[in-house]
Image (tube, rainbow, N blue to C red; front, side, top):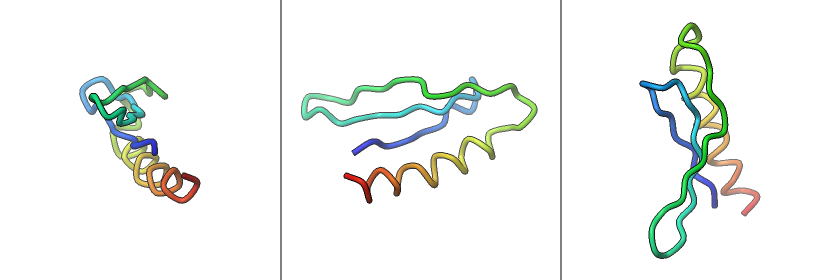
Length: 55
């Protein structure tokens, strides 16, 4: 299952996966500061449950 997180300092959406030996992460999207973190948090809030449903 993919979990989505936000790095508020870099304005980035990050995906993470548990491997059993630790977690892996990758950058999904980076936005300019103008939209703020609320857009990214909204995406993370929607994408994580979607990943659970599809998993």
